Amino acid sequence: MIHKLAVVHPDAQIGKNVTIEPFSMVDKNTIIGDGSWIGPNASVMSGARMGKNCKIFPGAVVSAIPQDLKFAGEDSTTEIGDNVTIRECVTINRGTKAKNKTIIGNNTLLMAYVHIAHDCIVGNNCVIVNYTGFAGEVEVGDFAIVSGATVVHQFVRIGMHCIIGGGSKVRVDVPPFVKADREPLSYVGINSVGLRRRQFSPESISSIQEMYRFIYQHNLNISQALDKIENEIPQSGERDEILRFFRSSSRGFIKRPS
Image (cartoon, rainbow, N blue to C red; front, side):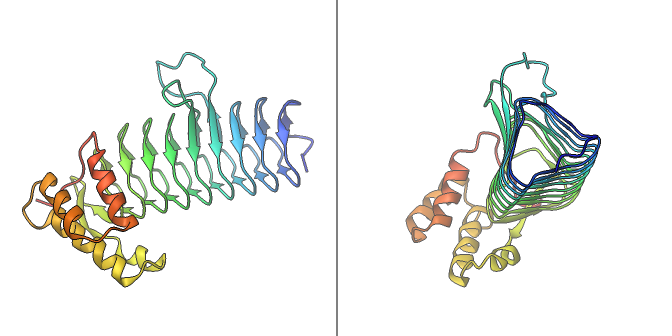
């Protein structure tokens, strides 16, 4: 149902069973997936590609042009997965020539007043809590939770299954499977509660714990710690992800609390 007081461009591709409430706007060059709901006073701008069963609440702006002075009007998109909830006054900017797209994965919740800048990639099943802001080209792994009023520096990576405490300044990479808090942001343990809730086995959780002991508790430099992990910890998806993440870091990563 498209309300008569909504503004929908005739070139917009609207799926089946989509509701567009009054005073909302859907621009040209947009795709709205089946079963989605666009709340009143929401704006879906050019370049938006939304999956099925998404919800956009009042005041949200999806796929506005980047807040980047290098942006020169190039074609780019904002790609939203299925079952994504975008709460009040969230802003998501489309990509630049850096990646040409901003991506939000399936089943992700963006709470009120979150800002996702150009060329960010947010994984599946993430929760980004109120008032959090991502600068450009931030990458967030699946099942990550970023607590409220957190600010994330450009190019930072946040690993899968991690949780970051509220009010944090994220200046460097946050590895997968960990808890991060304090100022400066530091490693404060593995996210054991989250891992149990997601049905990681006790053996997998124990292995992750042992790997982070090598990295943060054995007084090894990072190359030594990663070599010991590779040589002494049995191969697993979790081991490979930790090794990949640390070895591909360009900004550095959080340390132990001093």
